[in-house]
Each structure stands twice: as C-alpha cells, then as structure tokens.
Amino acid sequence: MIKFSDLLKLVLNNLMAHRGRAALTMFGIAWGIATVVYLIAMVSGFKEQNVRQMNSWGVNMLVLDYQRYYDLNGTLMPLTHDLADAAYIVENCPYVTRAVPRVENWARMSVGEKERRFNFIASTPDVQQQMEIETLHGRFFNSVDYDTESKVVVVGHRVAEHFWGEGENAVGEQLTASGTVFDVIGQVDRQRTSSDWSVYVPLSVYEGMFGRVGEGNAGALTIYATLDNVTNFDKGSVMVRRLLAARHGFSPDDENAIRLRDFSEWREEATRIFLMFFALFYSIGLITLAIGAVGVMNVMLISVQERTREIGLRKALGATPGSILLQFVLEALLITLIAGFIGLTFGLLLSGIMRQLPLPDEFPPPVITAAAIYVAVTVNVVVGILAGALPARQAARLDPMVAMRTE
Image (cartoon, rainbow, N blue to C red):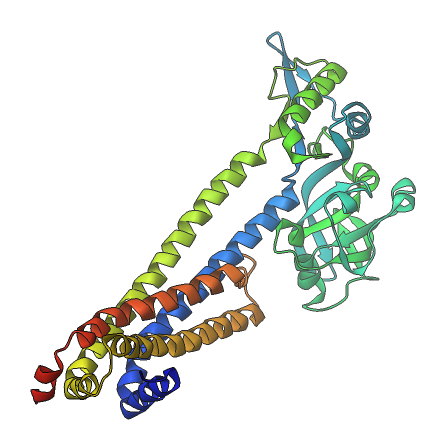
C-alpha cells in the first residue's frame, strides 16, 4: 500500500503540473473565505457598538425619566424634580446599590471663533463610577468642585476634536457655554456613543446657569439607579415606583409620572436583528464558497478524466480503491486549504486596515471574533472534502482494464 508521504508528494506534483488551473480554482474559495471573515467582522463591529451604546444608557439599571406633571383624579399636578430622590432610592430599596441624578440639555458652546451646539450632561461626581467614564487626559470633577460650584467641565472626544483639533489635549483650555466660561479639567477618550458629543458639568453649576431642574428651560431629571442584580429588574422597578409615588403623591399605577425605560425589550430586538444580519452574511459567504466548491469539483472531475489511464495503471499495480479515493480527496482538500489560508489572511488584513482608517462614528471598525475564524476554517475543510468526494468516488470505481485502454 502506498505511503501517505508518497501520496502527498503525488498530489503536490500534480498541482504543480497544473498550477495555473489550480490557482484559478483557488481564487473562488479564497474569495468566499475572505467574504465570510470580512462580513462577519463588520456585523460584529456594529454589534459591539450597539452593546456599548446600550451599556452607556444603563442596561443593568433602572432609568427613571421625570415628567412635568402627574395625573391626580383627572387634575394635572406639577411633579417636583427632586435631586434627593436618588439618595432616597438607595436608602429604601434593597435592590438598588447606587443612584445618580442626571440632566441633559443642548447648549451653544464656543471657543474663540468656533461655535457649535453640544450636549450638556449635568450630574454629581458619582456619575463617573456609575457610567464607567474614563478620562484620556486630566480628571473628572470631584465633590470639592461640586460643593464649591466650580465652573469646570469634562469634554467628550468630538467636542475636543471640534474646538481644539484631532489628537489635541483640551485640558487647561477654556470653553464658553450659554455665556458662562468653564475651565476644561478632563477629556474623555472616544466612545463612539452620544457621550462623544457631550460635555460633563457639575449639576450644582448647571442649576446656577439654567435654574432648578424640572422648571423653565433647565431640562427634566433622569435618575440612573444601579441594580444589585439584573434579574431583580422587575422587583426593583415596582418597589422604586411605589417609593417615589408615596414621596411625591402620585398613584403607583401612574406609569406616566416617572417613566421607566425598559432595556430588556431593546436588547431582545437588537439580538434578533443581529442574528438576522449574521444569518444573512453567513449565507452570502457560504453561497460564494459553494460556487467555489463547484469550481473545485469540476476541476477534479476533469482531472479524473485526464488521468484515467494513470488511475488504471495504478490499480493494475495493486493500488486499492481506498488509496485512489484518498488521493483525490486529499488533492481537493489541499486546494481548498491553501485557498482558505489565503482568503483568511486577506479577510483579516482587510479588517485590520479598516480598523486603522478614520471611520465615522456611524460606521464602527470591524471586530474579528474567534467564532468567525472557527466557522470559516470548519466550512473550508467541509467544502474541500465534499468537493473532492464525487470525483474521488468516480476515480475509485474505475475498472483498471477499461481505464488503461482509454485514450
């Protein structure tokens, strides 16, 4: 029986003898693998950005949006936006470990001749830990800044880029917002979320500029309350609503007084959407691979026809059908493996180049996942075996006497 090393040498010699044809055959497989890797990397990038955005909104939190009024027996009553509600929730609800008040409001800001509207995010110093905000330069405002109503701000990536330029350190500069001059004490690294377009300011300073939260143009209060466990979302939301209803005098059944954002539905919807995208792009890649596999199969069938006499001679000299079968499967598999390696390399290279480009925030960089590589490699091997199975079976079943008489 022929040794595997001799069989491999025979396969390689045949590929080298028809290297032009083999190269063209490999192209289809390489293109299919590169398509799978790149498309899945793109979808993974969008998914990662979506998860990051939802985390910044507070996926594991109770997010409470205060309204201007609540309904009391058919009469609209003003709802007090009390910043102390955050501490009250923590003290009285066992499911909440931390809570911070937060107000957002768009304001016109300027530095020298440059002017643009950006988002004010006014909160307490605890918002840094709550939202896991890390500064690229400088620091976040602290309790001293808050208590003394220091006019300091921490700017997002896009704010710093617009006013001071890409890659510049904004710490130590000054920024004017709604007529008030602020010292920039910190700069947040790029998040690819709405925080990139925001400026963080102490809530005590914000109320000094715009008035009491919930009144006039000061904006509405939102409280972000961190749960001890995400599974306690339902119990925590019911208890918090009852606590605030009793504190402010509205009915616990009134869901419009303080609206609760339910991120579970958003997560489920986002999960379904991304599963559809993954299925779609995997299908596109697999269809491309299937076309390449058909090309490999056709080339192998042609190879069987061209080498009919050789196959007959080998079988007459004692080659078993199994060794003939293995030879052609190995040849097809070798073609797809080489092509798959080239395609995988090209897909990874293209994804790496895309990650280095200055892409807009709406177009996140590709993310290479181990799952995408495993799928690409597995499918590549399966395609190679299937593409070589039919021609190999045909070659193994040839009658040696008939094959040797073939011209």
